[in-house]
Structure formats: structure tokens, C-alpha cells
Length: 239
Ligand code: Y39
Ligand code: FE
Ligand code: FE
Image (cartoon, rainbow, N blue to C red; front, side, top):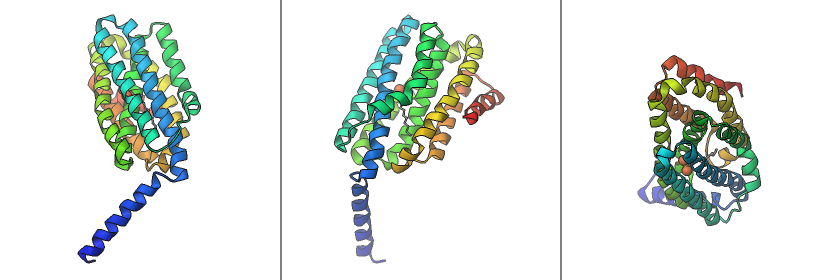
């Protein structure tokens, strides 16, 4: 191939890439994935506010995290507007319902460790996996936004890790129980969006792999032994 031919190939490729984002199929899938992310950020915002009551010593830090989630939500709403997509919020609400209910139940009964497992470990690792897989296939506008957001999500994950590590012995049994209850829920959620994620260029296998890496690392940082991490991870497979 001559240099000129090579250049024109690159140009026509980026032309094709641009048309993907305006196709009906892409926008249809985006209306659900974008809604999930917006709803997820909204719920994360609310969850960190709920955590303030349970962890009054960390009020400032938690309020700061909740503000970040609210900014994320606005960023992703802008991504939808940029592609002229209306997010299907009704779908997103039902998508998050089971995790939402589990968090609410735990908050009501004062099960702080369960709340931290759901929001700070499971949901944050889900966000980290999804955003890292999305960045390379995103449209340029959404890519910029998501790159900024994913950095924050590591900060959120770190908050839960640090607290749980400091209270590891007292939290261990509740963490294992909450993991057993909530990890299968995540796999069911992933199965529901597998097809739409694929339409956006995100493979389920890659999402699962990134999630398990982030989640396993978090459990390791908190103090779990390798065998315990493997047993805890295996609960997802039942879904
Ligand atoms: O802490 C956070 O910001 C988490 C709320 C956001 C979760 C986003 C969940 C994304 C799931 C997307 C699934 C795509 C396949
Ligand atoms: Fe977020
Ligand atoms: Fe977050």
C-alpha cells in the first residue's frame, strides 16, 4: 500500500466510525445503557448520602463522594444529548431495582457493612469495569467524559476498601453473607444488558473479567485470603 492509499483507508475508517453513533441500532442500545449509567450515578449519589447517617465521622468525605456522583450523572446526561438519544429511565429503574432494594433494606436495619459492600465494592467495581471497557469504543465526546469519571470511581472504591480493611475482623462474616446475596444479582444484571453492551462494542467476557479483577483486588486489599476470595467470587457463577 502506498502512503496515500494508507491515509485514505484511515480516513474512510474514521468516517465509518462516525456513522455508527448515528445509526438506529446504536442509538437504540444507547438509550438503555446510557439510562442505566444515569440511574446508577443517581442511586450512587443517594447511597452516599444514606451512608452519612451511618458513618457521621465521615460526613464530609461522603458528601464529597455523593457530589462527584451527581456530577457524573450530569456528564452522562450530556453524552445522551450529544448523540440525540433519550435515555430509557423506566428500564434503568427496573434494572437497578434488586440492588436498590437490597441496599435500602440493609440501610433500614443498620447493616452498614452490607451497604458498603453493595455500593463501595460491587457497584464501584461494576462502574470501573464498564467505564474502562467503554472508553476505547466510545464516541469522542463520551470518551472524554468517561475518562474523567472513571478516575473518581477508583477514589470511591478506595473509601470502602480503607474502612473495611480497618474493621476487617468485625466485618468479615457480614461481607461474606452480603457477597453471597448480591454478587449473583450483578451477573443477572450483566446478562440483561449483554446484547446492548455488545452493540456499543463492549463484550460481556471483558466486562466480567475487568469486574472480577477489580473486585478480587478490593477483597485482597481489605484482608481476605486467596482461597476466601475464590470462594466469594464463585457465588456469581450460579446466576
Ligand atoms: O459509583 C458509581 O458511579 C456507579 C453508579 C455507577 C454504576 C454504573 C453502572 C454501569 C453499568 C453499565 C453496564 C454496561 C454494560
Ligand atoms: Fe460515579
Ligand atoms: Fe462511584
